[in-house]
Structure formats: structure tokens, C-alpha cells
Image 1 (cartoon, one colour):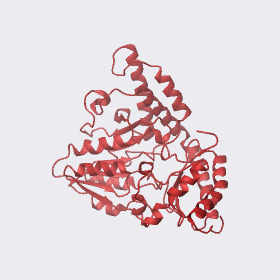
Image 2: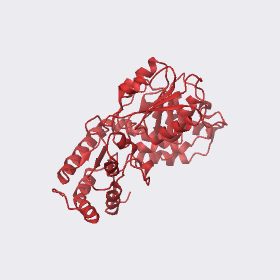
Image 3: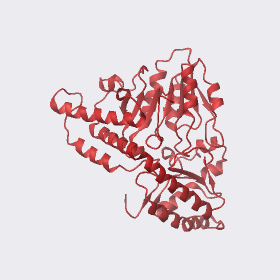
Image 4: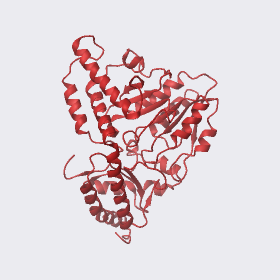
Length: 390
């Protein structure tokens, strides 16, 4: 990252942690295929299995439950297809929250093209899925239920434990998208009764193109990628030794630093929200009333399009997002914010700040010092009067 820029978009991707970069470099020197029996293959396999153990510790799982993938989207697709491909015909429904990441929603829509019926459960205005409405949909005809652990746009933590218990009671497989939550809050998939848990390495400072699907022992899936015995025949293909080593190292760092980082980022988030409120009294924060990840701030400023503000901040040296990075460039406003009851205009005004391991307090002060001038320029460009406090 350039020293002249400030990166505030960790929910899109977090910069590679130093420990992960070292692990990638060291593992890149290995030439063996982990599936080979010779010494080079055995060394490569040890690296992969060490990384698997590190990722397992991140979420409190057993190492043999961790299936390495190319990222969160593949993990989710593998879970949805893997369960639905083996679902009995008397279980034609898939229940999802309406504020899931697009990877879940699109995988569910693909299943719908094969005859499944997808039921979307709405959010409350605070950005938390309506538990009672969700659990009333969990019946004997449900093939799979899906709920994210924390929302990627607002940071709101979802009631996975309540929903998971009800799914387990009724024998319904439960998929939890933990891509944004992992490394930021403690996760216990057993307490959450999660049968399947999706992870992504680059969201916590690992290499891009790495991920994992945690499959509870006893759950049998139809493989998304077939052709070899890798990953206990649950995901064929030669493992990426260096990338998985980096994922494992990032997971270790995240676990070790989680408590300190939680306290540090909570203070930075409070500073950001307090100052933005002073600069722009009419600002609206999204999901602030509920339990959130400490690294995420989502807000809208009336009559200021989020895309315009983000571009202006980018030109000033600050990297933010209008919401989900996977929706960048999309014309439609965020389905998450619309689901929380925002109107179209306010949803299009949304901006997301997301902090992480590399965020420094001095960078936040630089951002807050520059924000009033950038906002005023944007408003002048839009033909609006500066608000009091700008």
C-alpha cells in the first residue's frame, strides 16, 4: 500500500499479513505435489496439513473437517450444490436470509433452476434477520438453511445460534457464511449447530484465492469438483501449497491478535462515528443499534450519492467502498440496505468504512481531517449547500 494512501476497505479484501507473506514465500520454495509419495511430496503435504490445523483452530473445528477451496464463493457453492445434490425429493425448499451475500443468493437461485423453491426471510430495520420468521420456515420439507454470521455491508452479527439450534432439532442441514466474521469474533460452529461453514483467506489477511469449507463430521456432500482424491475426495485438484500456507499463517495471526485488535478497532470505530456525526449531523449509520463487527461503519449522507463520495475520497487518497465489493459497478442499490427498509435514494448513498490489522490511528485522523473538505466539494459539485458542521 502506498504511504500516501489510506486503505479503509478491509471487508473487500484485507492486505496480506507479514506472517502470511513469509509463509507463502517459504512454501513457494517447495516443488513437491502433496499427493506424491516421495520426500518432496511429503514435505508439501506437511505444509498443507499444518495450514489445515491452523484454519481449524480459527473456528474451533477438527482438522479433518476443513476442506480447502479457492475462496468463500466456491465454499458456498460447494455447500449448496453438495447438499442439494443429495437431498431427497420430499425436501424441495431452501431457506435463506434476504440479506445474504450474493454468493449464497446466486447459488440458491441456481438450485431453484433445478426445481428447488427458495424462501427468503426478511431483515429487521436494524439489519438482523427476523429469527421467528426464519425458524417458522424450518420444516421437514427443507433441504438446506443458510444464514451469514456477520453481514459484509453493515457488520451486523446475525442470530446463528438460535437458528442453528432449530435447524438441528428438525434435522435440517445448516450452512453458515462466516467469511466476514472469521478472525474478527470468536466462532464456535458446534455451539451454532453449523453443519457447513464457509471461510475466505483474504478477508483476514491471507492470500486471495484461498478459502475453506468446514464440513461437520457425518455430513456427506456431492463434490462440486470431481477428479481426484484430494481433500478426502470432497474437492479434487492439486492443492495450492503456498497459498494454503499463507491462509494458515493469517489464521494463526488472527487468532493470536483477536482480543487486542477488538479493543483497538472498537476505539477507532468510535472515533470515526463520533467525528462523522459532528461533521455531518444528518448522517445515518446503518445497523448501529445492533451487535456489529467492531471494524465496520456503514452510513448514508442525505442527497450525496455514495458512488460520488467514494470516487472523491479515492482521488483524495482514501480507499472506501459503497457497500459489497462484489456489487461494485452495479446499477442497483444494495439489497441488504433495501431489506433494512432504506429507500432507493438512501441505499444509493451508502458508504462503508472497514478497518483491519493494518489500519493505524494516524490514518484515521488523516481521513477525518480530509473528509469535511471532500464532502463540501462533492456537495458543491451536486449543487447543494454545505451542511452545518462541514
